[in-house]
Image (tube, rainbow, N blue to C red; front, side):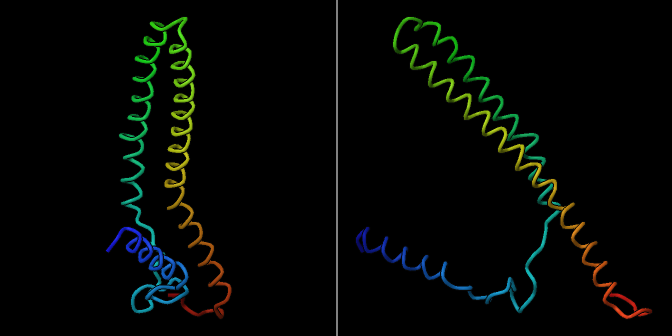
Length: 140
């Protein structure tokens, strides 16, 4: 099979998946009709911890390492077009690092808010159900 044939087959397969509800049907139902909207507090906590302890510090460290080495190289090439080009490229790098750090901080905040948001939603939903139940009936 040529690359073009394989690529066409993969594109057709993905278009079919995009345009269908999938094997579980529509409506967010999982296997055997079970609801599949769930949270994983342990996994969320692990992801937040990884962002705090590994990813964010590593990003800062990589940015700082580039600052040190590029700064000294730019000084060595002062007066040359290479020095100017390196300086411009390094400024762009710095903007990229700042953008990545901001994105990681936003992702961490979103992960931290997920459990709280689901908990609040569950409380609101429980209150709404309680209002619909006849007086004196036990809720499950």
